[in-house]
Length: 279
Length: 153
Image (cartoon, rainbow over all chains, first blue to last red; front, side, top):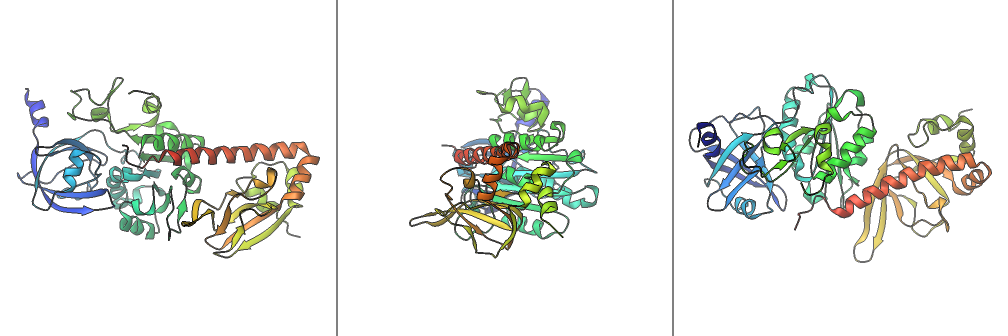
């Protein structure tokens, strides 16, 4: 094994500093290095491979603040053997971390433009670092609009934080749920319905979308219909990433390696893959 | 004298409509306001109007036994509410309730149907616009049925 591969395939040991339940099936892990690797620099939108000893390794986007690299934060949903085991971790437990991997959100390219962030469900987690970064440099961007759609009111991720963003005078935040429950007085319906409400200059807007692929496809189509060019729309793809460095081919879609060329792609470069079957 | 024409002309649903058609619409239009909690229409009632929403929020609800009123969708500024006035037997299929103070332009259904029958250009133009709305809502419903945010089993 050459040195490059060995470096990227060897997990570093991290310790759980805090485990927080976000919703019924999502949680946030805050990690600190157990081996002295601190701080953990990363770009908004990048992911790590997290290894639960004896169970397995999964790719998880970093959901923390790039401006606070001393805290390595991941938010995910308990859906498989590894993430279910991860949910049982407590402060002090150890796990392996490889990364950061991949290409992140175009936070720099968006400077001077209006930005529309469209998140669906757990897709808010990979977008949160970009939101932190833009809020920390708020004067460098035009209008900032955050649209968030999720299943039910109980599934709203980072609820308190969304409320604090909404309280700001320089950010427009709209939330909708697919299914209302008693006591919900907000919007009901799919997230694309919120797009016409967003007060942005569509010709100078950069859109960042993350969520289930169906949601991203419909959102990108709606944005294009409303005048946002495909080369100003970015989506984050999720595939079965394994090595993280474009070697194993598990996440390969045609000639594209999601782990290395993505996970964030310009929509016009990836839109053909979004509607193809069996890849 | 002020008329509702400028408000109708600026609304996204009617933007770009020919002047002569706007003038026809104004004859069927009236300003309405609903307080939070007030019903705009009730399931089973005659669909005697449709609404061009100016601001506020309206929830479309379905009452289900043992579940109460379930909100299916919400509409607000820039949206159009109601198409049962177009389709016999012209009865509302759902309840619509203002969840915030809401201002709208109500268009009288009989008046509109008569004008559309008498002026097929107007009728066709409105049909095209409603077809787009119906298509968007059908797409949204299909997407909601997919339950895309649910856990795949």
